[in-house]
Image (cartoon, rainbow, N blue to C red; front, side, top):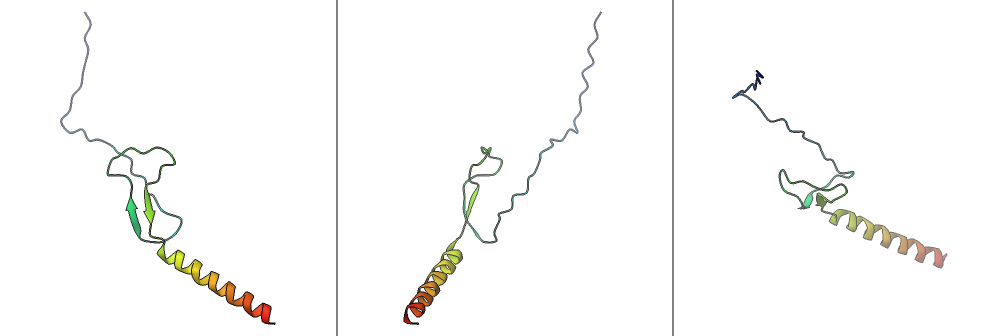
Length: 75
């Protein structure tokens, strides 16, 4: 005679792993490419940050370089 004991419970809980995702820079999230509980592949983009401040800073720096080059030519 073989007796199989199969325990059961009504108080089981699912365990999930939450992973904190932090960008390398600070900024506002502009687009989110994934949904809640959606599986993603390694290397897939999850979100995009608003880069308008960085673009403005690059343009300001570019204009300052142009001004300095113009001053250097005059000197």
